[in-house]
Length: 52
Image (cartoon, rainbow, N blue to C red; front, side, top):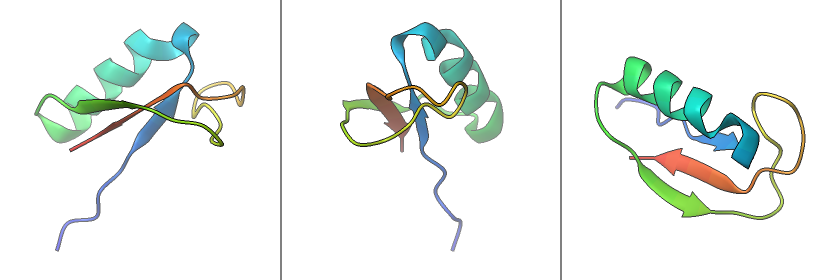
């Protein structure tokens, strides 16, 4: 079974998160608002996550 890799990101890193997700997964992600997670790129409070 393939491990799912979610991307958590703040508004500032939205473009980076989408680019990385598309390159890694070759499919368009679902976007969800989140609380209680850190941005994978800068460590600030994440506002969204990308997942299958």
